[in-house]
Every structure is written in C-alpha cells, then in structure tokens.
Length: 635
Image 1 (spheres, one colour):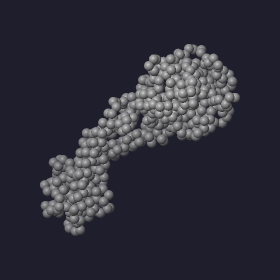
Image 2: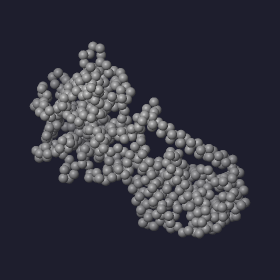
Image 3: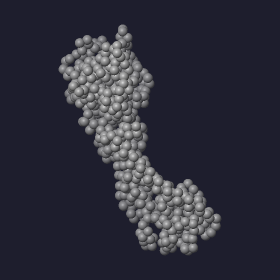
Image 4: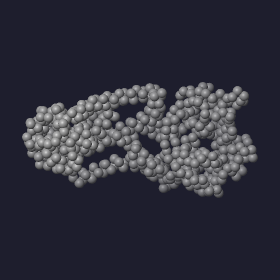
C-alpha cells in the first residue's frame, strides 16, 4: 500500500523537491559570493549570510509563492498584465524541474499541464519507495549519532556541581553586564574534560571543567568567560540547532555539511572580534585558547558553543596580528537589505504574476484587448412538455448560444477543463440551467473570421470568461490534487468514429432559445443514456464522459480530428459508484449491465460503438475552486 501511495504522489513531489533543493543551492551560492565580497568586514555579517542560507533549506519558496497567489487571486475576465516574459524567465530560473504548460500542450492536445506534470518524472514502480527508504535510513543514522552525543553532554551537565562563588562566577557576572545579557547564566563545574561551553537554548548553562581555573591567570580566565557570554548574547546555540535540523533532513546534500563548517568558523571569529573589541589583551586571549585546547576535549555537538571551534591556527594568527575588520559601509548595508527583501518579496511577487496565468488562455494587449459580447441574454431554462432536459451549446462566428447549460458546464467550457474539475460554490451552480444568446459586434466578427482555428477557440473561451465575470460575478482560484482518473484510449480493433464533414447537420434538428434551428460545424445533443456529437474533438467526448462517470477522463487516444458519433448506454447504472480496477485495467465491478437490460453499460458502449476504451489510473487533476459567484439578472 505504501509503495503504491508513494508512486501516486511522486509525480507531484519529485519536481517540488527538485525545485526546493535547486532554489536553496542558488541561495547558498549567492551567500558564498556575498561573503567573499565581505571578507574584510566583520565576521558577524558573514555569519548572518551563512545562517540565512541554512534557514532557506527549511522554508520552500513555494510557501511564499502561495501567499502571492492568494493575495493576487485572479478575477474572472481580468486582463493579464504584459509580464509574460518576466514571469517566464523567473519560472525557468527558479523552478527548472516544473513541467511547462507549453511543452505539455505541444505533447498532448488535451492542453492540460497538470495532467501531464507527472510524465517527466514517471519512474519504474517501486523506485520512489526505495528513495524514501534510503533517505529515512540516513535521517535516522544522523539523529542516532547526535542523540548519543547529546546524552553524553546532558549526563555531564546533570552530574556537574552548581558554582555559588569564586572568581569564575564573579567574572561571569561582570561579562554578562558588559555584553548586555539580561538573563543570568548558570555555571556548573564538571569533572569531565569537555571544553568550557554553553549548553541549552532557553536556559543556558555554562559547563566549566574542573581544574582548568588553576591553569589560567585572571586575564585568560576572563577571556574564556567573555567568549562564552558572547555566544549567549548572539544566540549561537539556537542557530546551530536549526542547522543541525537542516543537516538531518538534507544529509544527502554535500554543501549542507560544508555550510555547517562555515557557520562554526564564522561564529567563533565573530566572538573573537567581540571579545577583542571590548579591549581584552590579544596575547592573553590567544594563550587562554591554547591552554584550553591542551586541557580539554572539544564539544561533539555544534549546538554546544565552546571555545576551540574553527581553524585554530588561523584564529590565533588573527588574534595576535590584530587584523583589522571594518564595519559594513552604508552601500553594502543597503545591498544586503535589498537582497534580503528580494529573497522574501520575490517569491510573493512571483505568485502575484502567476495568478493570472492560471486563468488566461492568451495574453491581451492594448492593441488586442480582451474580447467581449456586445449584447447577451441569460434566462432560466424550462424543460420541454415531457419534462426532459436537453443541453445544447454552440459557438458560431459572432454568436454563442446554450440551451439548458449549468454554470459549472459553462465554467468548464470557458477555462478548458472538465466540469468535474470545477469545485465549490453554491448548489445552484450545478442544478440551475440557463439559456444564453450572446452576440458580438459586427467589427469583432470580421476580425474573428480572419483568425486561425486555434486562436478562434481561445477567442471563444475568453468571450465566455468575460461573460461569466460580468453577469455571474465569477471569481476562481486554482489547485491541483492527485486522484483516480480514467484514460480514454483506442481499443484493440481501432476507432469506430466517423470523421465530420463540413455542412453536416443533425437530421432531427436542435433549436436554440429563440426557437430557430441550430446548425453549424460543432454540435452536441445529450439525453438520458444517449449523446450525439457532430464535428467534435475527442476532448469534448472526454469532458462529457467525465461528467457521466464522476471522474476525470483524460484523452490519450492521440486522435486529432473532429468526429460525428452516437453513443447509447443503459442510464439505470450509476457509473460513478463503480469500483475501479487496477491501474491499466478495466473497471473491476459494476461494468456489466443488468441481465434484463437491452442497452450495455457506458464502458461497454464506448468500446463497442466508438472503438475506444477506458482504463483506470492515477494522475494529477487540475481543480478550479469557485471563490465567489452570483445569480445573474434575467434579461
């Protein structure tokens, strides 16, 4: 069960993890460049940059992008801004592992990027589980090693004796005051040979090895204590604990361990600079470090701030030669502030730019504004004398008409999704039916007739988007989730579809809201257990089947043309309640019609009458969430 679950979520998880690692590595590289530029400045500034790069591993940019998308929730019919090039560049650099919508369109006429997102990362079955198992084993090993070391130090602290008096305690209190540490640090004398170090984050404890005081004169002792107080002042234990978490989660990333070494080196240099800045003699300070190294053993954990960390030889040279370090200039401070602001605000802006992309089928410009209908009539639909409900939707140059269409069906049409992919909103969006008769201005019709076929379709969709935004006050947002889907494929003996011919019409005729017959190149008539299509792409059939089956149907037939077809099945069966078989196979149960039924199930009908077949599988499904909608006024 677990391997199957991992295989299901892997297509979405793999690109997300890849993007996060890539973004974090880029931030680490940027921090390296900046620290190199500031090599003559104070170590505290470089330490802050390395720490920011470490924290980035714990904060995916996708969270900030989600904030931007939420703040910039697109409004139906809103015109996208002319930022496509900027958006594309940002996406290519920051999310190289995310499949692009454009490539998905070129590879699949369904034009559903979310449905194709998993193709690039599809792997052999079971490999995701192996990778997760390897990561988890490494995670446990790192934690086990650190827990063993932590218990060793914790035991030493518990066995240590609290110090109540003495020159060590007096010096400690003096340096607490000079460093501005508000909370008193408890001092404990330990019989172990661990170096002097600060243990704990909320309630720091200074562990002082027994016998070391006899080896240090007053100046050297104060130097060691000053160093430890500055660790508390800078909250170095908290920062070290955060990076230990990063190392445990991303143990497989070699730069994470290199980053840990840089953090230890810069934090020790920063404390050295703070101690010397307060006027402590360099020679006494250097001698105190050397004597501590002779007497003590270094701390086995980075989250216990000691004295002997970093390159000892380099530290002694820096201390004794009094290498000058300069404060950051105003220009560099502004540069760092701008970079920090960009790191936080950039993903949010990225999300703001991304929000309209979910909705836009094309990018209107001032020269080519978003199209709109000149007049539109929307009225509640009334069933015929027999009580049956018929649904008809037609696009013709300059005119859009529907009979008995629900708002959910209109949303699916306008945004090129299946109506099963539309979620949320009040119940009437899927129950109330409308007759619509909308017309464009003559000048717009003339421009429309000059467009190529693919742009005509986009024009149709944008027209309906504007109509829904204007008359239904519709606002949507986008989500994606993993779900069971059906793949519509060609059956073994090939398709049984009749390719549409120009001028074909239904023999019985379909009438629009005004009572006039509707003809034209694209028509669909639906009834209980029956559907007739004229001049329709397989995508349209997939959308219809999605509604009938209650699950997403993805067109995998590879058929590119327009077709006429008639499909009849037993309407008494409930396809949405049928059990689904294993991926790649037919429905496991419920697909057989009742013994007394003269019509087949919809699954059998699709195979016998159309030469197509439904196969159950899993895949990402794009969902449109209705945030706001209002019933239109009748006119």
